[in-house]
Every structure is written in C-alpha cells, then in structure tokens.
Image 1 (tube, rainbow, N blue to C red):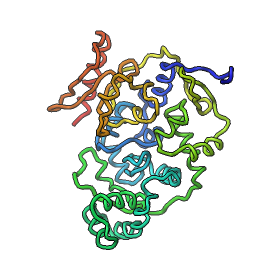
Image 2 (image 1 turned 30 degrees about the vertical axis):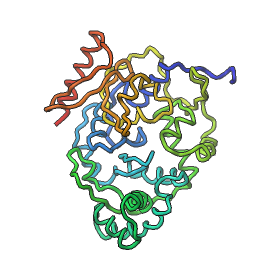
Image 3 (image 1 turned 90 degrees about the horizontal axis):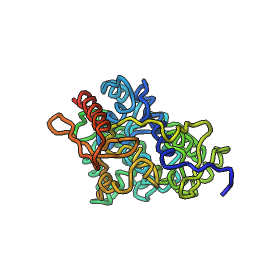
Image 4 (image 1 turned 45 degrees about the horizontal axis):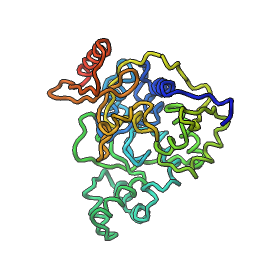
Length: 344
C-alpha cells in the first residue's frame, strides 16, 4: 500500500455517500436532474422513485415526474442488476451499451432467439406479457419459466420497455410494453467508462467490487473502462481495500451533521456497494434486505439506517432498531409528518 494513500474512515465514507446522494442537504432540482445525477432510481415498487426524489429535494410534486414520463424524457427499463429503474432517455442508451458485454439477460440464447418476435409485436402497438408469452410459445415452442426468461431478456435486447403509465404513482396492475425508437449507438467500453465515472460521482469513493455489486458488470469489463478514466483519486478504507474516486468529488468531514431521511423500498444507496456498512449497519442487514430479495423502507439517523417505516391508513408507522435520543426522536417525528403530508 502506498504511503500517500489516505485512509477513509467508515464515517467519512458515509458522509461522502450522503453528500453525493443528496441526503445531507435537499436541493431544488427537477426529477430529471435527480434521476440523472443518481444514475437511475430503482423502480420495482412504483412509488419508490417518488419517495426517493421527495427525500432529496425541495418542492417536489408527483405530477412533475409523471409529466416527464409521459413525454418520454424518463423511461422505465430493466438495466443495472437487470432490475427495473427509471432513467433518462439519454442514460438508457448509455447503460444498454455499457452492460451489453456483461452476460446480462439480453445475452442469453433464448433472448436472442425471440428478439425479433418481441420487437415486431411491440412495434405493432402496446402489448402485454400474456400476448408476448403466447406468441413466444406459438413461434418458438417455449413455455413456462423458460418462456418468461426469454420474454424478459428478449425485450431488453429489443428495447421494449414498460410504458409510462407503469411508472405512475398509482400504476395499473397489468403493465403494457412499448418499443423504443431512434437508438443511440455507443462504443461499449466507452459507455462503461462514462457510467462508472457517473457511479463514482454518485456513490464514491468505491472499490471495484462495489462497482461490480452495483452494476453486475464483471471485473474483465470494469478494468479497461477504469483505465479510460485515469487519473483517478485513490484511497483505502479501514480494512485496507483500495477505493477509487473521480477528481474533486466532495469528501465532507466525518462529523458533518446528517439529518434524518426516509428512504423508499429498494433505494440504491443501500444496494450499490459490496460492503453496505457505510450506510446499513451489518447487525440490521437481514431485517432490511430479506431472503426473498425484498428491501424494506428505512429511515436514517446520523447517516445510518436506524429503523423501518410503513404506511397504515395514511399514517407512517415506525419501527426503530434501537432506542433513540430525545433529539433524534423529535427529528424523526418531524420528518415523518413531512412524509405523511407528501403521501396521497
């Protein structure tokens, strides 16, 4: 280890992450600006991006995001970790190129087999899973789990996305799918470099293993992309792991105050690191990230996950993991009231 490499403590990494995630100070930003800054927002649960933007910004209104979705400037697609995200249309094409050589679902043999079928179906008009699976069985003889996997990977490969209504706060239960037009072409390694630069700006400093955990791009793809980003800043964490970072990204002091924040289900700040302890203490991990892959709604106290929240009859109900100080409990209650005012 070089003697010039600064060691960053856990609290320093926590504060750096919070600053870049807009969780130290709310900003007056548009939904499009927030989604682009965070390199997408996880969207399996339709309200998640709305709560995620609300907790990071001032004066956010749900209708503002829904108008952007209707215009097509923000889209909903399977991308990073093959999970559903909201991203800007510009970032969609960049991400698709970045992950195109990483063995994601679009590279599976059955995905390639059904690509043209899926594309032609969606080009004829909005479609749904029932229609698509029936056609895949008719034309390719695939059924059951294999057909569903082919449909998932085939629509990724064919640029067939969830329609904008599926990303509204009150999304319909049965989603439609539409064909995206006018593709932008990017060189994959250059796209990976840009996406990793953006990841570091939003989540760094981070290790190569963190980048892998966030993106499911593997080290043979990550290494040459990082070489295109040099020079990078280099640090070590308290366990000696190398961390890299983009120049001039914020590194607040460890004692920077961190306000209470409420996070939605599957918020990426909990999922984008191999070592999640910079925000999620290990003793609480299994209570937050369930065996079935579900990720609970959480709240942060002093920058770290301190409990869960859910909505019952229009009220936010809290489950703290430990006894909070009076000052912290007062701040949690104040933020809870703000969230209740935002919820429909």
